[in-house]
Image (tube, rainbow, N blue to C red; front, side, top):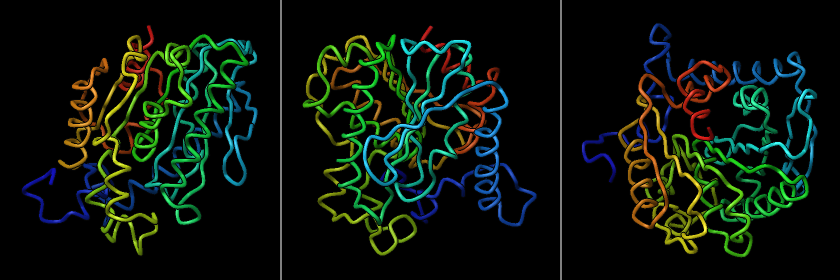
Length: 299
C-alpha cells in the first residue's frame, strides 16, 4: 500500500478528489473535471486561430488516429517532434481534450503528434497496450520518414502508464531509434495497477478486462527493462503535481527510483500548486511554470 494511513482507496485513486480549487462549489471534484473538459477543448479550438495546421494520420483502425500539428511558418517535416499521450484511466477522454501542450511547442518550431487510442471496454487493457506498441512503431517510422530532428514523448496519467511501453519494446526500439529520443516525460502517472484492478470506482465490472496477475504484469513499476544502455542520451522526467493523493505522488517517486536504479538518467520533481488537471491545462501558457520546465528540458 502506497499510503499506509489511507482510509478510502477510492479517493486515493480519484485525482479530482484531491484538488484544492473550486472549493466554493458544492462538488469541487465535479467542477474540476468539468473545467478540464471545457478548457482543454478551448485550447484545441484556439490553435486554429493561431495559424497552426493539423494533418490527421492513421496507425490502425477505429480510434487509432494521430493529429500532427505544425505551423506554416515552420512547416519543414524535419522539425523536432513532440508526442503526447492522453490519460483518462484507459476508458475516457480523447485527443480533443489533449491539445493544451501543442501551442508552445509549435511556436518553438516543433511538430506535435497527439494520438487517440481505443478505450476499454471496447478493448482490454492488455490489447490496448499491444495497440500502443503498434503506435510506437508507427511514430518512429513517421519520424524517420520525415527525418525529424529528434523526438520527445510526454504522457499524462494513464497516458504516462502507456508511455512506459516505449522503454520495453525491444522488437521496435533499436539503438538508432533510442538515440533519436531526447526526453520522455511522465506526468502524474499511474505505474502500479495492483491496487486498482478490483477497485470498483476505477475498474467497474472489470471494464479493463484484467486479472490480478495481468494487473501485476502490466505495472511498469515492476518491470525489468532491457537495453538500458540504448537510452544513455535520453532524459527521463517523472513529474507529479503537489495536489495529488499520497498514492499518486508515491507511485511517481518509486517509479522514478526504479528507473534510476536500473540505469536510466532520471529526474523526479513535484510541482508545487498544481493538481492532476491544471498541470496539463497550464501547458498551453508559454510563461507557466510547467511550460518553462518543459522548455528547459530540451534546451
